[in-house]
Image 1 (cartoon, rainbow, N blue to C red):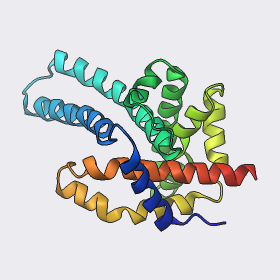
Image 2: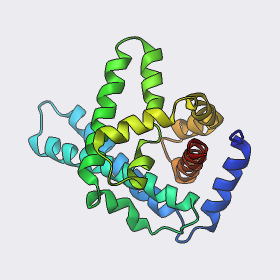
Image 3: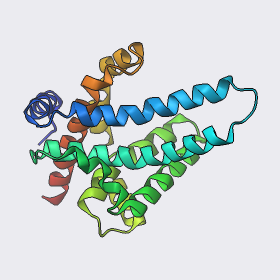
Amino acid sequence: MEFNIKTMKMRANALIKATKPNPAIATLILMAFAYAISIILFTMMTLDSINVVLSVILIILSLLKIFVDIGYSWYTLGVSREENPSVGIMFQPLTKISIKAFIAVIIKNIIICVFSTFFYAPGIIAFYWFRPLYFIAKDNPEMSVFKMLSTSIKMMKGNKMTWFKLDISFIVWFIINIATFGLFNIYSLQRVSTAYAELYDFIKDQSQN
């Protein structure tokens, strides 16, 4: 059985519309962190010297955004599973398996950076190894950090191209988002992330059969 991108994207859109409260609220929270970080970075670039206060705020917001990114993935996983999740689930990584998930993300980023030094192809492969990492952390809170990473790599064996095709199917949305300085994310981000959650559950079910 193959993953039908068109069908799953339509399903993700229907699930978004049926979820209450509107998932746009969760998306706006995530975007607020991103815009705050961008504003601080822009402000620091205009200064003649390093501002310690702004630097500390930037570090704190950047770290918090990692947790909120994880939480947003957990939220859209709940949407895809028709659980009608609360927006508050976005802040669960601050209290549940937060350290393990956070460390896993840091290690993932290091691995991708290391592989990227050996031309683009190895970096892209490493990037797709860890696409389902956040979802795996949600479903397996008892897992160790390295087990989460190895499970993600194992799950993506033979599925990297499928995930890549799903990414490519959103290319027009990505371009529109750039053209609108990220504002289009209010509409697109929740649908993209929910489609990713749909693909994750599809791959997970396939691997268990």
